[in-house]
Image (cartoon, rainbow, N blue to C red; front, side, top):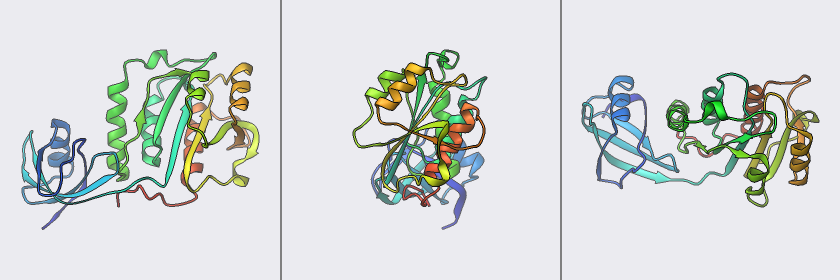
Amino acid sequence: MPDATPSLLYVEDLPGVGRRVTLSEDESHYASRVCRARIGDALSATDGRGALASVVLVAGGRSAVIEVQRAERAEPARIAWALSGAPEGERGDWMVEKLGELGVSVFQPLDCERGSWEKMKGRAERWRRVAVAALRQSRRRFLLEVRDPLPVEVALAGLPEGAGRWLADPAGEPAAGARAPLQGLTVGLIGPSAGLSAREREAAASAGFSPISFSDSRLRTETAVLAWGCWWASPAVSADRAS
């Protein structure tokens, strides 16, 4: 059976082995136009929550149908949450895309005293599509969750106990000397383009965040987010990769 490449479909309600499901219009278009799949071609599919399945295309068109041949499920060994203030301009899409490609689990936008995500409101559906595209491109089985903006103190109060906590700060410990954890939850906190206020920095320190530096100069918010994501992803090949 031939393979269609690239071939990772996102199917939110992925059925069990031997079952069939009709793809959404977006996934049908992806299968036929991007993967160029034909009837009988083998593809891969994920539900974005850890399942990875081998499927075969049994009907094409705008309402394509796949049948699940094999399936497995995994849990992530490493989890990352990125908490970030707003960047300058229209860089939210780019941040979501890169965090998704790196395998970050949660993107939590922060409304800060020196910058909010007000201009980005109403983009939840767009960011979900960007996250799905990043999942396909990177062939991962876990979809980035993009949450609604929260004030800094509210977001910090809702963090799980036991998580590793790091604050992007030019004056912090050099990242080269701080190894990202190989398991469990790691949280990165990045300020907005104008930086965190003194009160917000105090809140982060009280919440157990350790300052870490990714450059010998001040980085833009989106650059610091990417640098933190790369630092977290670099120690090991994550077990959540789809291939």
